[in-house]
Length: 383
Image 1 (cartoon, rainbow, N blue to C red):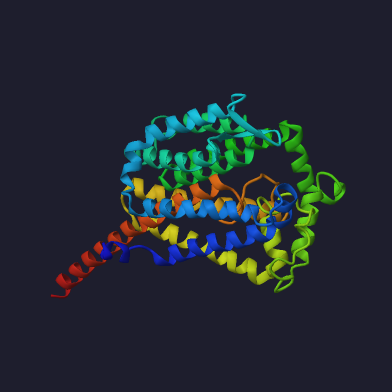
Image 2: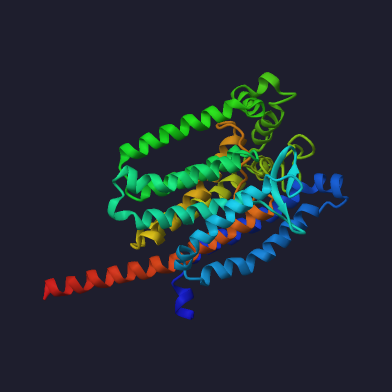
Protein backbone atom coordinates (compact mmCIF):
# COMPACT_ATOMS: atom_id res chain seq x y z
CA UNK A 1 0.00 0.00 0.00
CA UNK A 2 2.85 2.40 0.87
CA UNK A 3 4.52 1.63 -2.46
CA UNK A 4 1.19 2.28 -4.20
CA UNK A 5 0.96 5.78 -2.73
CA UNK A 6 4.62 6.55 -3.43
CA UNK A 7 3.98 6.09 -7.15
CA UNK A 8 1.20 8.70 -7.20
CA UNK A 9 1.90 12.19 -8.52
CA UNK A 10 1.99 14.19 -5.29
CA UNK A 11 2.68 17.46 -7.08
CA UNK A 12 -0.60 16.97 -8.95
CA UNK A 13 -2.40 16.12 -5.70
CA UNK A 14 -1.01 19.26 -4.03
CA UNK A 15 -2.22 21.43 -6.93
CA UNK A 16 -5.74 19.94 -6.71
CA UNK A 17 -5.94 20.40 -2.92
CA UNK A 18 -4.70 23.99 -3.16
CA UNK A 19 -7.24 24.79 -5.89
CA UNK A 20 -10.12 23.40 -3.79
CA UNK A 21 -8.96 25.42 -0.78
CA UNK A 22 -8.49 28.54 -2.89
CA UNK A 23 -12.00 28.07 -4.31
CA UNK A 24 -13.60 27.66 -0.89
CA UNK A 25 -12.03 30.90 0.35
CA UNK A 26 -13.05 32.83 -2.74
CA UNK A 27 -16.63 31.48 -2.72
CA UNK A 28 -16.96 32.87 0.81
CA UNK A 29 -15.62 36.27 -0.26
CA UNK A 30 -17.54 36.49 -3.55
CA UNK A 31 -20.84 35.16 -2.19
CA UNK A 32 -21.10 37.03 1.11
CA UNK A 33 -23.58 39.72 0.08
CA UNK A 34 -25.73 37.46 -2.09
CA UNK A 35 -25.84 34.85 0.68
CA UNK A 36 -27.10 37.45 3.14
CA UNK A 37 -29.61 38.98 0.70
CA UNK A 38 -31.15 35.65 -0.32
CA UNK A 39 -30.71 33.51 2.78
CA UNK A 40 -29.84 35.84 5.65
CA UNK A 41 -26.44 34.19 6.04
CA UNK A 42 -23.12 35.64 4.87
CA UNK A 43 -21.60 32.15 4.88
CA UNK A 44 -24.47 30.41 3.05
CA UNK A 45 -22.58 29.63 -0.17
CA UNK A 46 -19.38 28.96 1.75
CA UNK A 47 -21.08 26.35 3.93
CA UNK A 48 -22.71 24.60 0.99
CA UNK A 49 -19.43 24.55 -0.94
CA UNK A 50 -17.69 23.24 2.17
CA UNK A 51 -20.26 20.43 2.47
CA UNK A 52 -19.66 19.41 -1.15
CA UNK A 53 -15.91 19.45 -0.54
CA UNK A 54 -16.33 17.21 2.50
CA UNK A 55 -18.30 14.78 0.32
CA UNK A 56 -15.58 15.19 -2.30
CA UNK A 57 -12.80 13.89 -0.02
CA UNK A 58 -13.97 10.22 0.01
CA UNK A 59 -14.96 10.57 -3.66
CA UNK A 60 -11.42 11.72 -4.48
CA UNK A 61 -9.86 8.87 -2.49
CA UNK A 62 -12.22 6.33 -4.10
CA UNK A 63 -11.23 7.54 -7.57
CA UNK A 64 -7.54 7.26 -6.65
CA UNK A 65 -7.72 3.67 -5.38
CA UNK A 66 -10.16 2.29 -7.99
CA UNK A 67 -8.69 0.52 -11.02
CA UNK A 68 -9.47 2.72 -14.03
CA UNK A 69 -10.22 -0.32 -16.24
CA UNK A 70 -13.55 -0.77 -14.46
CA UNK A 71 -14.79 2.39 -16.20
CA UNK A 72 -14.15 0.69 -19.53
CA UNK A 73 -16.46 -2.17 -18.54
CA UNK A 74 -19.16 0.10 -17.12
CA UNK A 75 -19.22 2.57 -20.02
CA UNK A 76 -22.52 1.32 -21.56
CA UNK A 77 -24.24 1.75 -18.18
CA UNK A 78 -22.74 5.22 -17.76
CA UNK A 79 -23.88 6.36 -21.20
CA UNK A 80 -27.39 4.91 -20.77
CA UNK A 81 -27.69 6.51 -17.34
CA UNK A 82 -26.63 9.95 -18.49
CA UNK A 83 -29.00 9.86 -21.48
CA UNK A 84 -31.83 8.98 -19.08
CA UNK A 85 -30.81 11.81 -16.75
CA UNK A 86 -30.68 14.36 -19.57
CA UNK A 87 -34.12 13.25 -20.77
CA UNK A 88 -35.64 13.44 -17.27
CA UNK A 89 -34.35 17.00 -16.86
CA UNK A 90 -36.49 18.09 -19.82
CA UNK A 91 -39.73 16.69 -18.39
CA UNK A 92 -41.88 19.30 -16.57
CA UNK A 93 -42.39 18.62 -12.84
CA UNK A 94 -39.28 16.39 -12.85
CA UNK A 95 -36.53 18.69 -14.11
CA UNK A 96 -35.92 21.78 -11.95
CA UNK A 97 -36.07 25.08 -13.82
CA UNK A 98 -33.94 28.04 -12.69
CA UNK A 99 -33.68 31.35 -14.60
CA UNK A 100 -35.34 29.84 -17.67
CA UNK A 101 -33.04 26.82 -17.86
CA UNK A 102 -34.06 23.27 -16.99
CA UNK A 103 -30.79 21.60 -15.97
CA UNK A 104 -31.25 20.00 -12.55
CA UNK A 105 -32.82 16.99 -10.89
CA UNK A 106 -33.97 17.28 -7.28
CA UNK A 107 -33.23 14.49 -4.76
CA UNK A 108 -33.22 16.57 -1.58
CA UNK A 109 -30.18 18.08 -3.22
CA UNK A 110 -29.74 19.13 -6.84
CA UNK A 111 -27.78 17.17 -9.42
CA UNK A 112 -26.90 18.56 -12.84
CA UNK A 113 -26.72 15.66 -15.33
CA UNK A 114 -24.91 17.78 -17.94
CA UNK A 115 -21.96 18.10 -15.53
CA UNK A 116 -21.82 14.32 -15.17
CA UNK A 117 -22.05 14.05 -18.97
CA UNK A 118 -18.67 15.81 -19.25
CA UNK A 119 -16.88 12.90 -17.57
CA UNK A 120 -19.10 10.19 -19.05
CA UNK A 121 -18.37 11.33 -22.61
CA UNK A 122 -14.63 11.41 -21.90
CA UNK A 123 -14.79 7.82 -20.67
CA UNK A 124 -16.96 6.80 -23.63
CA UNK A 125 -14.70 8.38 -26.25
CA UNK A 126 -11.56 7.00 -24.59
CA UNK A 127 -13.08 3.51 -24.59
CA UNK A 128 -14.37 3.56 -28.17
CA UNK A 129 -11.30 5.07 -29.80
CA UNK A 130 -8.99 2.84 -27.78
CA UNK A 131 -10.81 -0.17 -29.25
CA UNK A 132 -10.80 1.31 -32.75
CA UNK A 133 -7.01 1.75 -32.93
CA UNK A 134 -6.58 -0.93 -35.66
CA UNK A 135 -8.78 1.09 -38.04
CA UNK A 136 -8.63 4.60 -36.58
CA UNK A 137 -7.63 5.98 -40.01
CA UNK A 138 -10.90 4.81 -41.57
CA UNK A 139 -13.51 7.57 -41.33
CA UNK A 140 -16.67 5.48 -41.61
CA UNK A 141 -15.65 2.56 -39.40
CA UNK A 142 -13.11 4.18 -37.11
CA UNK A 143 -14.30 7.75 -36.56
CA UNK A 144 -18.03 8.04 -37.16
CA UNK A 145 -19.87 5.65 -34.76
CA UNK A 146 -19.23 7.49 -31.45
CA UNK A 147 -19.95 10.86 -33.07
CA UNK A 148 -23.64 9.93 -33.33
CA UNK A 149 -23.79 9.49 -29.54
CA UNK A 150 -21.92 12.77 -29.04
CA UNK A 151 -24.33 14.70 -31.26
CA UNK A 152 -27.34 13.20 -29.45
CA UNK A 153 -25.92 14.14 -26.02
CA UNK A 154 -25.04 17.61 -27.32
CA UNK A 155 -28.59 18.33 -28.50
CA UNK A 156 -30.13 17.03 -25.26
CA UNK A 157 -27.95 19.53 -23.39
CA UNK A 158 -28.81 22.24 -25.92
CA UNK A 159 -32.51 21.74 -25.17
CA UNK A 160 -31.98 22.74 -21.50
CA UNK A 161 -30.65 25.17 -22.95
CA UNK A 162 -26.90 25.08 -22.21
CA UNK A 163 -24.72 25.69 -25.27
CA UNK A 164 -21.66 26.37 -23.11
CA UNK A 165 -21.56 22.94 -21.47
CA UNK A 166 -22.34 21.25 -24.78
CA UNK A 167 -19.47 23.09 -26.46
CA UNK A 168 -17.13 22.15 -23.60
CA UNK A 169 -17.98 18.48 -24.16
CA UNK A 170 -17.36 18.86 -27.91
CA UNK A 171 -13.90 20.32 -27.24
CA UNK A 172 -12.87 17.57 -24.80
CA UNK A 173 -14.10 14.82 -27.10
CA UNK A 174 -12.35 16.51 -30.02
CA UNK A 175 -9.10 16.48 -28.05
CA UNK A 176 -9.47 12.74 -27.46
CA UNK A 177 -10.10 12.20 -31.18
CA UNK A 178 -6.91 14.11 -32.04
CA UNK A 179 -4.88 12.14 -29.49
CA UNK A 180 -6.30 8.84 -30.77
CA UNK A 181 -4.28 9.11 -33.97
CA UNK A 182 -7.07 10.00 -36.40
CA UNK A 183 -6.06 11.52 -39.73
CA UNK A 184 -5.75 15.29 -39.73
CA UNK A 185 -7.96 15.68 -42.80
CA UNK A 186 -10.77 13.92 -40.92
CA UNK A 187 -10.19 16.10 -37.84
CA UNK A 188 -10.20 19.32 -39.89
CA UNK A 189 -13.47 18.38 -41.62
CA UNK A 190 -15.15 17.54 -38.31
CA UNK A 191 -13.78 20.64 -36.56
CA UNK A 192 -15.10 22.84 -39.37
CA UNK A 193 -18.55 21.26 -39.18
CA UNK A 194 -18.58 21.63 -35.38
CA UNK A 195 -17.46 25.28 -35.52
CA UNK A 196 -20.08 26.21 -38.13
CA UNK A 197 -22.81 24.38 -36.20
CA UNK A 198 -21.94 26.01 -32.87
CA UNK A 199 -21.72 29.40 -34.60
CA UNK A 200 -25.16 28.91 -36.12
CA UNK A 201 -26.65 27.81 -32.79
CA UNK A 202 -25.00 30.75 -31.01
CA UNK A 203 -26.79 33.21 -33.30
CA UNK A 204 -30.10 31.37 -33.68
CA UNK A 205 -31.56 32.28 -30.28
CA UNK A 206 -32.12 35.86 -29.10
CA UNK A 207 -30.53 35.40 -25.65
CA UNK A 208 -27.42 33.83 -27.21
CA UNK A 209 -27.26 36.64 -29.75
CA UNK A 210 -27.39 39.15 -26.90
CA UNK A 211 -24.42 37.44 -25.25
CA UNK A 212 -22.51 37.55 -28.53
CA UNK A 213 -23.36 41.23 -29.03
CA UNK A 214 -22.30 42.11 -25.48
CA UNK A 215 -19.00 40.32 -26.10
CA UNK A 216 -18.32 42.26 -29.32
CA UNK A 217 -19.31 45.67 -27.92
CA UNK A 218 -20.05 45.54 -24.16
CA UNK A 219 -19.78 49.32 -23.78
CA UNK A 220 -22.41 49.79 -26.47
CA UNK A 221 -25.08 48.64 -24.02
CA UNK A 222 -23.34 48.68 -20.66
CA UNK A 223 -26.55 49.21 -18.70
CA UNK A 224 -28.11 46.01 -20.09
CA UNK A 225 -26.43 43.09 -21.91
CA UNK A 226 -22.92 44.49 -21.46
CA UNK A 227 -23.37 45.29 -17.75
CA UNK A 228 -21.65 42.22 -16.33
CA UNK A 229 -18.72 42.23 -18.75
CA UNK A 230 -18.06 45.97 -18.34
CA UNK A 231 -17.93 45.55 -14.56
CA UNK A 232 -15.66 42.56 -15.01
CA UNK A 233 -13.29 44.80 -17.02
CA UNK A 234 -13.35 47.42 -14.27
CA UNK A 235 -12.75 44.85 -11.52
CA UNK A 236 -9.78 43.41 -13.40
CA UNK A 237 -8.48 46.88 -14.26
CA UNK A 238 -8.63 48.00 -10.61
CA UNK A 239 -6.68 44.98 -9.41
CA UNK A 240 -3.09 46.18 -9.49
CA UNK A 241 -0.29 43.96 -8.28
CA UNK A 242 -1.72 42.97 -4.91
CA UNK A 243 -5.41 43.83 -5.33
CA UNK A 244 -7.72 45.53 -2.83
CA UNK A 245 -7.30 42.73 -0.31
CA UNK A 246 -9.24 39.57 0.42
CA UNK A 247 -12.88 40.40 1.06
CA UNK A 248 -12.44 44.05 0.09
CA UNK A 249 -13.74 43.90 -3.49
CA UNK A 250 -16.64 46.19 -4.39
CA UNK A 251 -17.79 44.76 -7.73
CA UNK A 252 -19.25 41.66 -6.07
CA UNK A 253 -21.68 44.02 -4.30
CA UNK A 254 -24.33 43.83 -7.02
CA UNK A 255 -22.16 44.77 -10.01
CA UNK A 256 -21.30 41.18 -10.93
CA UNK A 257 -24.55 39.14 -10.75
CA UNK A 258 -22.63 35.84 -11.02
CA UNK A 259 -19.72 36.85 -8.79
CA UNK A 260 -19.50 33.51 -6.96
CA UNK A 261 -19.94 31.34 -10.08
CA UNK A 262 -19.19 32.42 -13.67
CA UNK A 263 -17.33 35.64 -12.80
CA UNK A 264 -15.45 34.61 -9.67
CA UNK A 265 -12.19 35.15 -11.57
CA UNK A 266 -12.95 38.89 -11.73
CA UNK A 267 -13.40 38.92 -7.94
CA UNK A 268 -10.08 37.11 -7.50
CA UNK A 269 -8.39 39.67 -9.74
CA UNK A 270 -9.89 42.65 -7.90
CA UNK A 271 -9.12 41.35 -4.41
CA UNK A 272 -5.83 39.48 -4.85
CA UNK A 273 -4.38 41.26 -7.85
CA UNK A 274 -1.91 39.97 -10.40
CA UNK A 275 -0.20 37.69 -7.89
CA UNK A 276 -3.50 36.02 -6.99
CA UNK A 277 -4.24 35.38 -10.67
CA UNK A 278 -0.70 34.15 -11.41
CA UNK A 279 -0.82 31.73 -8.48
CA UNK A 280 -4.18 30.40 -9.64
CA UNK A 281 -3.01 29.85 -13.21
CA UNK A 282 0.22 28.27 -11.98
CA UNK A 283 -1.88 25.59 -10.27
CA UNK A 284 -3.88 25.03 -13.47
CA UNK A 285 -0.64 24.88 -15.47
CA UNK A 286 0.65 22.17 -13.12
CA UNK A 287 -2.48 20.10 -13.80
CA UNK A 288 -2.08 20.61 -17.56
CA UNK A 289 1.62 19.68 -17.61
CA UNK A 290 1.33 16.74 -15.21
CA UNK A 291 -1.82 15.48 -16.97
CA UNK A 292 -0.18 15.51 -20.40
CA UNK A 293 2.90 13.86 -18.90
CA UNK A 294 0.72 11.11 -17.44
CA UNK A 295 -1.11 10.57 -20.74
CA UNK A 296 2.12 10.40 -22.75
CA UNK A 297 3.71 7.92 -20.33
CA UNK A 298 0.81 5.45 -20.38
CA UNK A 299 1.00 3.19 -23.43
CA UNK A 300 -2.32 1.38 -22.93
CA UNK A 301 -4.75 3.27 -25.25
CA UNK A 302 -7.74 3.57 -22.90
CA UNK A 303 -5.66 4.89 -19.99
CA UNK A 304 -3.78 7.28 -22.26
CA UNK A 305 -6.92 8.77 -23.83
CA UNK A 306 -8.72 8.92 -20.48
CA UNK A 307 -5.86 10.88 -18.88
CA UNK A 308 -5.56 13.28 -21.80
CA UNK A 309 -9.34 13.73 -22.02
CA UNK A 310 -9.65 14.67 -18.34
CA UNK A 311 -6.68 17.02 -18.60
CA UNK A 312 -8.02 18.85 -21.64
CA UNK A 313 -11.55 18.98 -20.20
CA UNK A 314 -10.32 20.84 -17.10
CA UNK A 315 -7.97 23.04 -19.14
CA UNK A 316 -10.62 23.94 -21.73
CA UNK A 317 -13.02 25.04 -18.97
CA UNK A 318 -10.32 27.33 -17.58
CA UNK A 319 -9.74 28.71 -21.08
CA UNK A 320 -13.43 29.36 -21.77
CA UNK A 321 -14.10 30.91 -18.35
CA UNK A 322 -11.01 33.15 -18.37
CA UNK A 323 -11.77 34.15 -21.95
CA UNK A 324 -15.34 35.14 -21.07
CA UNK A 325 -14.38 37.10 -17.94
CA UNK A 326 -11.65 39.00 -19.81
CA UNK A 327 -13.84 39.67 -22.88
CA UNK A 328 -11.68 37.59 -25.21
CA UNK A 329 -14.45 35.02 -25.73
CA UNK A 330 -18.28 35.21 -25.58
CA UNK A 331 -19.89 34.51 -22.21
CA UNK A 332 -20.84 30.82 -22.16
CA UNK A 333 -21.74 30.19 -18.52
CA UNK A 334 -18.84 27.75 -18.09
CA UNK A 335 -17.57 27.85 -14.52
CA UNK A 336 -13.97 27.86 -13.26
CA UNK A 337 -12.94 24.30 -12.22
CA UNK A 338 -12.47 23.75 -8.45
CA UNK A 339 -13.08 27.48 -7.83
CA UNK A 340 -16.62 28.48 -8.84
CA UNK A 341 -19.56 27.68 -6.58
CA UNK A 342 -21.55 24.60 -7.64
CA UNK A 343 -21.99 21.17 -6.10
CA UNK A 344 -22.37 18.94 -9.17
CA UNK A 345 -19.55 20.66 -11.03
CA UNK A 346 -17.19 20.53 -8.05
CA UNK A 347 -17.89 16.89 -7.21
CA UNK A 348 -17.50 15.64 -10.79
CA UNK A 349 -14.30 17.66 -11.26
CA UNK A 350 -12.88 16.24 -8.02
CA UNK A 351 -13.75 12.70 -9.13
CA UNK A 352 -12.18 13.27 -12.56
CA UNK A 353 -9.07 14.68 -10.89
CA UNK A 354 -8.93 11.58 -8.67
CA UNK A 355 -9.03 9.36 -11.75
CA UNK A 356 -6.14 11.39 -13.20
CA UNK A 357 -4.15 10.95 -9.98
CA UNK A 358 -4.85 7.19 -10.11
CA UNK A 359 -3.56 7.10 -13.68
CA UNK A 360 -0.37 8.83 -12.51
CA UNK A 361 0.55 5.59 -10.72
CA UNK A 362 0.31 3.65 -13.99
CA UNK A 363 2.34 6.36 -15.71
CA UNK A 364 5.07 6.01 -13.07
CA UNK A 365 5.09 2.22 -13.45
CA UNK A 366 5.32 2.57 -17.25
CA UNK A 367 8.22 5.03 -16.99
CA UNK A 368 10.08 2.82 -14.50
CA UNK A 369 9.62 -0.24 -16.72
CA UNK A 370 10.87 1.71 -19.75
CA UNK A 371 13.89 3.03 -17.85
CA UNK A 372 14.70 -0.46 -16.58
CA UNK A 373 14.51 -1.85 -20.11
CA UNK A 374 16.73 0.92 -21.45
CA UNK A 375 19.21 0.33 -18.63
CA UNK A 376 19.29 -3.40 -19.35
CA UNK A 377 19.89 -2.82 -23.07
CA UNK A 378 22.59 -0.29 -22.23
CA UNK A 379 24.39 -2.79 -20.03
CA UNK A 380 24.23 -5.44 -22.75
CA UNK A 381 25.63 -3.06 -25.35
CA UNK A 382 28.54 -1.92 -23.15
CA UNK A 383 29.37 -5.49 -22.17
